[in-house]
Each structure stands twice: as C-alpha cells, then as structure tokens.
Length: 86
Image (cartoon, rainbow, N blue to C red; front, top):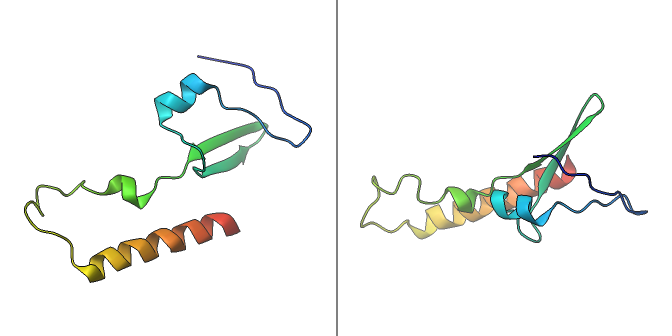
C-alpha cells in the first residue's frame, strides 16, 4: 500500500496510523533513517526487551540472575547511545 505524507517546515513527517499499528511503532520509539540514492528508508530499531523470551523453553521455570538483568539493561543503554551517535 502507498500513501503520500507531507513534510512540515521542521522536516517532520507523520507515519500513517494504520502503518504504525501494523508495525507496532509507539511514541518515543527510535527509527533508523537510511538514504539509498533518492530513497529514504525508516526502520524501527529493535529493542532488546522485545527479544526477551525468545529462549523461553531453555530457561522455563528459571529467573535470570541480577547480573544478567543488569547486563541486559547496560546493552540496551549502550545500543541506544550508539544509535544517537549514528
């Protein structure tokens, strides 16, 4: 599906609501903006917290240690820092 959006005087565009819902993009979410020739791509940055549970079967019935939780939070902070610098 294609939809036209308007660029504001501040260079902002609104992602259509139907697309935000489909892609589960919420307020405050980070997007990577990539230029490929004359094309601009916006890609949601996956949060590590969204990946939580992908190994659920392996760790079923166990709770991650405080060290693992701290490491996950640090990775998230570091990843977000690198995105801001990019």
